[in-house]
Image 1 (cartoon, rainbow, N blue to C red):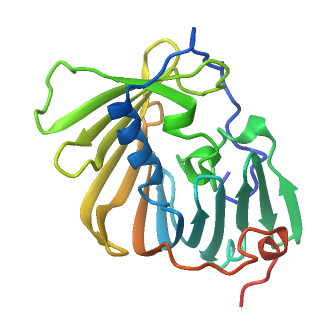
Image 2 (image 1 turned 30 degrees about the vertical axis):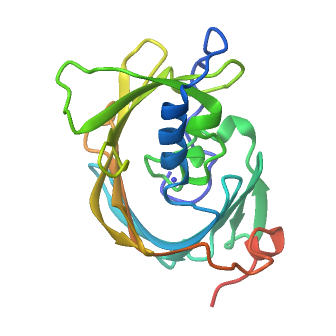
Length: 254
């Protein structure tokens, strides 16, 4: 999700992980993964989000509007701070574009940059726009950690055949009572944990009960973290017809 919006200084994609053979998730696991994938999106959604990026040397907070349709359309527009206001991201299917208002230019994001940092945060482009999904690009199975919490489901994911992934494995912890995610741990191809995302502040959002805060912590970067807070949301309401268009991407904000 460099301090500016330009992605030229984004992280390069490291060694790519591939799964060894075709595997399928059980129907129960697939249902849980679909729930996580659609948690903040639904058929259509609109949200006001605050992103706080923290490093040992600086801290910055972005306010932005966020629209989605299904799992294959995402639109993000930055509202503040003033230096970033109007910057926008559009994703339709497998294509993604960024708009930079200071130079009035649209740039297409190549696939190699999907795992790069979004807006200098600890979230990647793919984290924010969700080109890859847990249920379609990974297969999963239940597992038992060393010290399990009986109130949680634990699922370990591996990338499917042909899926190019930054992660060798992802482990999810999901509450059994309401099926809401609690934690996601991301591992490299050698099984080393690289980052953790925690879900918290469970409460009402757009008529649903869900985690309103996500905190991403990269374990290789001491003192770095990024928090996303959902301030408001609306689900399954009609969206303007031109929401997911290049014309809207370049629209100037007042």
